Image (cartoon, rainbow, N blue to C red; front, top):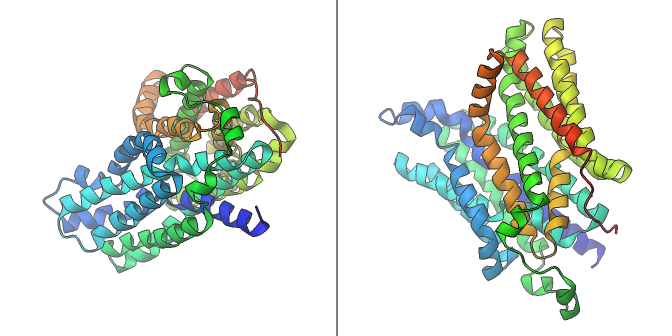
Length: 397
């Protein structure tokens, strides 16, 4: 493969990550849409940002058999095209139920290529190159979040319908993937390689082993990340040393830190290999524990600094788990392995409010500082346990 072809491939594979969290792009339109549709309960309008998660879960599971029938490239392109059409329907639709249906369809499109954002990297890359690309994927995902909120905040000034124009970003993604990703015919391995490749395995067989542990790790990691996102503004407000806008700034720092951490992930992995998982988790635990102490120090600068530390350290967890899951599952099973972890992520997001409620009852407080210190203890225990996990066999390139 020529240098130009390698760049096109990398750009194509990373581009689809920009769309993975695009369902949240319209969150800011909820109050305006509540006025536009006064007869619709607010909970139904709020579901415009959550119902895509349901169809994502369904189509993440279906994406593997669909890809085996249609091919990886065609499946991704169909998914991106669905995101484009479904995302733009609300710009012309007058029926709320049609808009709600389009949001379900949007999640279906995302679900078709969600797992492939990781599995195709595992398919085309091995060893340290795979780890590095997984880090870049995390960076592009974070960049997508930043672009999403920047463009949405601009477009909302023109009206709620205009915010949905954000999904025009699917056009360059479609073109880039069509241009840069090899066709399925080019992806086929020589007969000798096919015979050496690992046989296809079933979902039940994968869930019996180490991959289930990874799914649980990514589930708990996502719950903890969501807790930080939900509680950081409250921590600043209850501490009396900032306003709600300062919490938004902290979240912006968190996003930038995630992007930087993903970019540096490959280099860090080369230095410490499997230790990257416990190190990332333990540093994040220390940062969250320190945030509790800083609620009394009333220092926004230190809060922002520790938020950055937490963002940098947690950004090391996802790339390692996705890359290692591909090593465990073997050649040909990358999409199925990624799908298992993505299901874990979505379950973690869904369960977070209930877990926080249970944790509040357990510790006898619903205030941000005690919640964060309890979460930091849980995270430290998980991080310590991962020290005993051995690294999957990997081939360096």
